[in-house]
Length: 391
Image 1 (cartoon, one colour):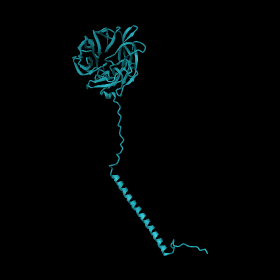
Image 2 (cartoon, rainbow, N blue to C red; image 1 turned 30 degrees about the vertical axis):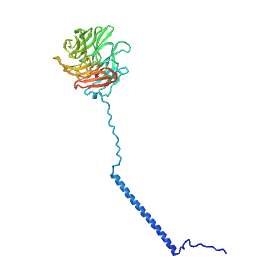
Image 3 (cartoon, rainbow, N blue to C red; image 1 turned 180 degrees about the vertical axis):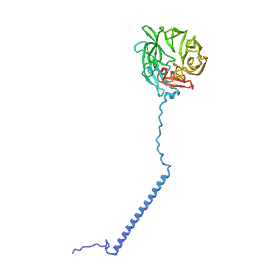
Image 4 (tube, rainbow, N blue to C red; image 1 turned 90 degrees about the horizontal axis):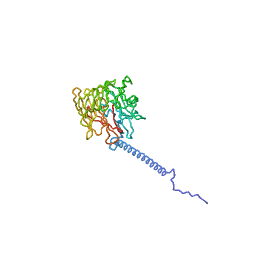
């Protein structure tokens, strides 16, 4: 007969004391483990919080390893190049230079007193001369279609031709805006005079002159011409009032002129009478008279003499006492290859262009301040033949 066999001994009966004791032991162990885990987690949390506070305190107090703060560099204000007024302290006039670009193009350039560099201006090219006020410019320019010269009159911004077939021109030494020139006409060569000032283009006179005559000096009511090795002073009606034969005219001022007479640079008066030799050296010299800043004559007649020497040239500025005719030298400078000299404004600054010894065909315009004795050299593009001061 089949019987079911039960295997006993694998578990304790639930109701036995031994089973209850075993269950109680297991729950105790689990509780103890849970409590231990909680205690350990709490301890780790406390230690971690302590370490974090310590590191924060160290970082807040120890900056020996901290990176320096980034400071953006300040480039500062970019200063533009100095203006002409800053380059030549005391100068009040603009500069107008005429010459050629490095490529050989004939140009006229103007440097405003408050500008940092010169600019090319669109006016006819020619050897320019400025009137007593510094406001009017005259230039003899080649005709575009022809062999003679046109006379252009205006300023640095605009000029117009007022005469053709012109041989020479000169401004009045004492009256701004008055200009006289020689012109070939069908009736011969005449000297014409006009007033460009307030009156406006009014014709003052026209005088017949010799074929080869040049106008050289307009002082008051007298016009002086150079013809055939003589200097001749004329009234407005053309009558001759003074003559100096064997003389070459150099420059004129209000009431005085410099001529080359008997191989000597000589000071003459308005009647062309030789009064005193100009002590400017024995070599060939060129002279220009200064004017005061208000357009009148200087209390002491002031002149600049540029004389050639065996080693180059010297520029000497002299004062002349009109009553005693004594000459006093103010300053002397040496130049290498000077061009035409000119007074810029008044009787303080003298300008002389010369080739740049380093970078031809550039030029250097040397400006002498007769008040301080300093010389400022302005770099100028191209070959400068002459420079004038305008207002």
